[in-house]
Length: 232
Image (tube, rainbow, N blue to C red; front, side, top):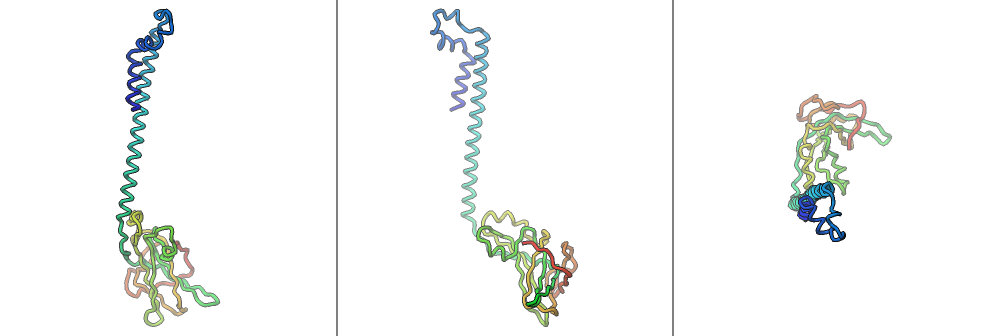
């Protein structure tokens, strides 16, 4: 509508400025011929008409563009809502064991605290953070099973799990694999003694992620001289 009106008005101004003056202004004068505007004035009216046409086209195009944007946003929102409604939460997927760095023993009056450190992807959080959160979704997480083995040995098995809970989680899929990132997670070994040997089936790596021993049953986890700074 803006384009149609603007083009019509501007077109009349540009094409017939003299006719416009005679139709709208001449009645004010007893001698219209003597008071008729100059050619320069008519030229300004023509220029004004061209400007009105251009302005109408610009405003009209802006309105049309805004309408298309609103329509596209509305359709995108509807499609997203439909996809979210159709999303079915899959079963958790185990994505493999995580490499172990080592363990550290710290003495307290109440006894020993033995902590095993392992490497996790950058987007992964520890399972306890996922369980505590009721606001955010953490589809990529780690956990570590600890079991008593034969003799005085304790076995640790850190694993990576992929468990998306909503459609938006799927964008993290490619970043939830073993061998990606250098975050450090930990697990405590309850009931471990000073003589306990810690073993794992995972690969043994240094704190930079470089492999020392490949994954194999009964790999002995090295004892560290100090504890490591861990990520959530």
